[in-house]
Image 1 (cartoon, rainbow, N blue to C red):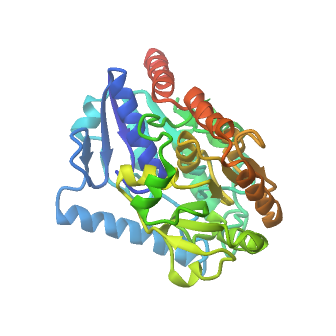
Image 2 (spheres, rainbow, N blue to C red):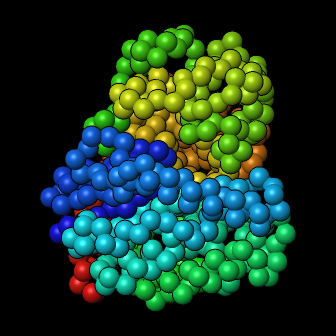
Length: 419
């Protein structure tokens, strides 16, 4: 069986990481797997890029800017929420790509920011091949948003979008959902939600009518992400050996959706621990932001080397994720696989990963006070071998490569049999 995974990026973002991990997990089960992305960034032989020339690069850039400007214009020239929504009105035409023609199963992942359009997805659906779509956020089942927050308008026709400056009954979200309905409804798409939370959201979407929805988590390489010597890890990263370290990571650490404001407030509530507890950042962060915390902060910058990423987790006593929007975050999975307890808000699939007061702490949403209390709770137990072991045991039993790959292989076979 030839499986084609399709994702905008090869290496950038959580969906790219999850997509590549799934490809390798499927290969270990004997599947013939390829990945098609916008632009190939590595030497991996199973990854192929649509971009072949400077003209292709220009096309991607133009498509991306055209979409953003359209949103910017509709939003009355406000930058707020500019990247919280996508329209997918333009994209690459891949229906005649050799990998698409050869594939027995087409497996979509995150396809926004100029890669695939709604029309392009419609063309793939009309090929008559099984189409599986792993939802790394809510965009496949909403009008334009990647996370709907408390809004349930996507249950019907969208409209009155809270992410637009002038919401109305027939605003941009309404018109894009209408396009999606024409394409998606009854198309026999096999939607996959990485978390139970997202599965429940998908089930109430008007776009899921006539499609199937299942829950399969992302896989993780538990041989790579594993416990290690804390002192060795800290030496490798030039971090203090005599402190308790809180680890926080995000592609763009200052992104408000990642809860940076709540983390700042929580660190000030922990200021009495400042002699013994410090903060470690991974990701892009502005220097002026690092200076506003109540604890001393160390900036590691963006880390791409897998061995250093593992050491980053191994160096920590606690991983913190104050995100306001999440699905099934890779970083919590990675930290727990390394035996590191986590603290996170009760959003998305986080509470499915962290077992409250057993492997970590699930905080009351948007409460810096409870988030700080959770950090104290975890730090008091961070040297407990059984507490750390319970984190890794949970990951081994729920997210191992073989378990996840076998579930996808079963889904592919079922999807093929229905065609």
